[in-house]
Amino acid sequence: MSVILAVFLGMIVLETSMFALNLYQESRSVERGAERGFDLAGTYGYGGASQENDEDGSIRSASFVPGTSNDGQGSYQLIGEFDGDLGYRNGTFRRTFDPNVFDLYSEDGSHMGSAHLAYARPDGSGLIYLSVDGLDCSLSKWSATPGFVE
View 1 (cartoon, helix red, strand yellow):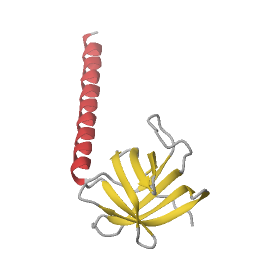
View 2 (cartoon, rainbow, N blue to C red; view 1 turned 180 degrees about the vertical axis):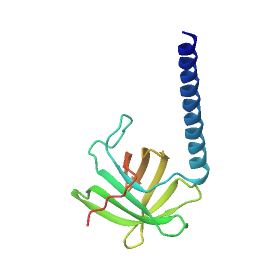
View 3 (cartoon, one colour; view 1 turned 45 degrees about the vertical axis):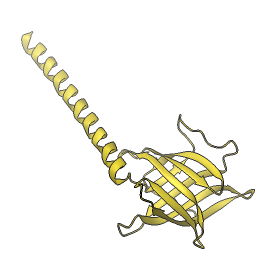
């Protein structure tokens, strides 16, 4: 009986240790993301319990692809309702002094708005706040893989 109890207690200690280690790693990941910037790459869209999007859902999804260098630049695509028509907009982004805030530029180089990446976890989840042409919304991260419409 004492062997079974020892094995059971050992399993509890092992599970507790693994849980604590996972919690510590998650905490360090959030800390590093706040200091150096979270991983922006991926596709964001409606869905998630904390959504507070604008009522008409003008921006439905956003995809971001970082550039090939480490300069904080890349490209994006927004899908939504712009000027009353459903479509998409492509452009480029640049990281600002805040590693989780990006300025968005249209294809012709004019400033369109900003994106604030609230967080992005290694498991692929995250939340981004967009302010584009007077439209404000929040989108949940669907995937770490960007999805673009051609």
